[in-house]
Image 1 (tube, rainbow, N blue to C red):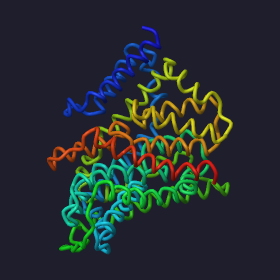
Image 2 (image 1 turned 180 degrees about the vertical axis):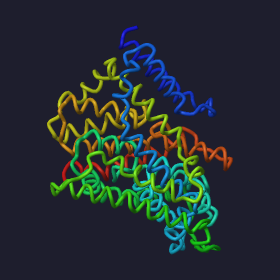
Image 3 (image 1 turned 90 degrees about the horizontal axis):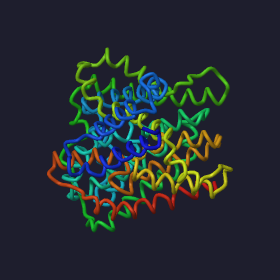
Length: 421
């Protein structure tokens, strides 16, 4: 079978599987991608011998490390305690809603958005109960704010880590924060204010019945998790500073969280439970995604559409707008991480070394997750938890209704910073 036909078949499997998934909720997203990877290897153009060269192991080790550190923080109760410590000073529903957005967003920025999607629902539900806000309204805020918050660091989401690796940025952590931190913080305040109005949430006073530190279940593991997370972030920032100054530094920055987690596996009270809490489905999703997306790219079926909107890259505002449009549109078809994997290859083909191109890709491909449920894996994770644990749901149409407004607001804030500042 020709490479182009295989690529079309793979697109049909991935897109069709994602679209049909609401009808088969028992079917995980990683199983759809693993089927596509199997077809890509059996029918070509990727051979078994190609797999070690196609799979980005730095990204996989990064995910294992970050998931492990955050798993220990969740297991010990540290995350819940920090959440309530952050929220407790606020005494009205509107202020709690804005504070919750900052909480979810800033947590996602330093603990990976898919991890926050897994651990955030219990926190969101508890805040909703305490404040008298409907669970659906709090879960919508969780989905939108963790997506926005994850934009501003290379460890906020997997596609950003992929961009940090593929772009060749000397100091990705500082580059992301320098360009994207301010508009992200503005968005994290603007989004809840918009939702508070359009969702019709009534303001009012709120009283709390528990203290934040009541939620700590294991003080020793909580301290280890805090030190581990702080160490991983500090090491990556220090590494960026070393790179900028020309001092010796680590080139494979994604391995830093894994090295930190390696120590925690020995020091944690129950290391087997920590490892069991790692989202191995997401790890498998990425491993098989690299194979599938490489096969689709080799088939050449997406290049005509992409090259029509972005035939060359000269660093103009028009080029950045083209990257934004392609990211928003194609992320709805492929989801943002597979799209980023494909588009990074195209930017290399264009010879785009301008950090602004890669930062625009990071912003747009991530914000695309706020438009529809299919735009980001974190949306599906939150939806599954909402349905299985809390007996509520958010339909595709509901998410799109509010997501279109949120995405438009996001772009209106981000684009001026990237285009003109």
